[in-house]
Length: 219
Image 1 (cartoon, rainbow, N blue to C red):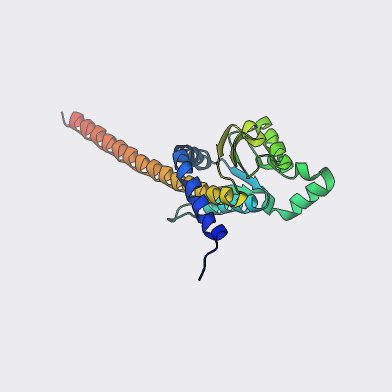
Image 2: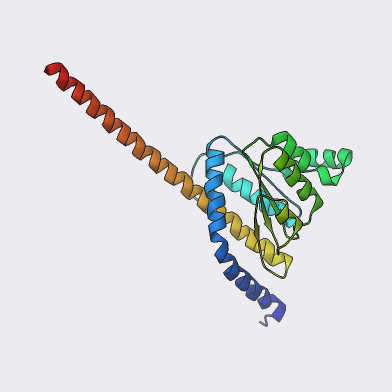
């Protein structure tokens, strides 16, 4: 069977983009660590995108509410575009540019995180959501295509994919989502181990204190 150049070329393009993106692993590590602290402390992740990016955003929230690899407690993560009644009502009453911003104002609290995914980095409804989030004290992270772009400029942190096609950018975004989830789970596990170690040390300290008190009584 003949494989046409555009088909195999897609694999080549992805391979090149993935090789370049590997250098951004430290950003996904930092975001996963930060998410573990925010969500573990009772905060929330809000996520949004348009089209294929909406699917990627919803993939992220599903991994956090459900699980990524190993079983763990669920965490609060909402894909804003998934509430079709809210998005269509807001679009009808306030305009498409407000579909995410109004939900951010409804659900976002200071200290929460808003993740925005966009291959172009120029979607007006995501830019409005970023503005609403910053005004509410919600931290904004952007996963975009090539830099520079407006969403990158309007976010607290951004991770931009250097790739010539929308399809490849979306594929790398999925890799980034999984890397963030891996870092998130690892941070939770480190926290649990630290908590167990601290608990053991505290227990040993209490036991030693009780022993010293008993000795003083005997004397």
